[in-house]
Length: 225
Ligand SMILES: NC(=O)c1ccc[n+]([C@@H]2O[C@H](COP(=O)([O-])OP(=O)(O)OC[C@H]3O[C@@H](n4cnc5c(N)ncnc54)[C@H](OP(=O)(O)O)[C@@H]3O)[C@@H](O)[C@H]2O)c1
Image 1 (spheres, rainbow, N blue to C red):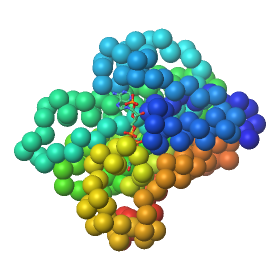
Image 2: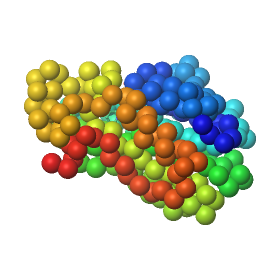
Image 3: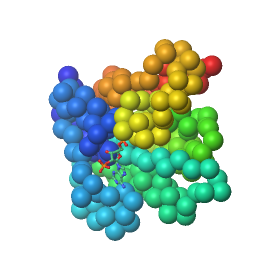
């Protein structure tokens, strides 16, 4: 239980990892604001601008950037549209939301920002050029904001999930790929979304008082091999 009812802004709450985080935090007594796509479409500049304008001055204690897309493609087949969309959703949107939400946190001298990155923000794989660009980028944002916002007691961290059982993984990882990947995960299984949610819950909690600027990899040991 939190001491104070903290207000959370969370993207990507409709399913997968975001939904698990939303449920974990709501169950722990947080007030979670999770805009649906109709209210905030990160791929649409106008929608994002409207959302930022409407919420300027809203007093969020916590921002969790979860929404993300991964359209895999070999280099020669990458479409310009995919580059623009992935940059907007995975990188630019989270940065602008952090700029908006941090204003209230600064005033209160308390805040937590968690960016959901990926193992492909630390290592990479073929066909993940754009995705990795965005996920390495968000980890850079995490580091820079941790430095800039630290004096205001705003703690900023990335969580990098490994393979997690969501629609995104079902789209990009076929049965054959799964057979190849599993022996390379020391825990011999993909993560469940709630296992990622529990890491985030600690990071945004009152218990986290000194952990900031970190790129936390929750991958069952995959990147340790
Ligand atoms: N699953 C994995 O193995 C894995 C591993 C590493 C990192 N991640 C990262 O974890 C995050 C969540 O992934 P997931 O597996 O839970 O994905 P998912 O099941 O595909 O869910 C994606 C979420 O992002 C939202 N979203 C997508 N495009 C959006 C847009 N233009 N505007 C606003 N919201 C948008 C979706 O909303 P709608 O319902 O409106 O589409 C949905 O809530 C992503 O950042 C992903 O890169 C996932």
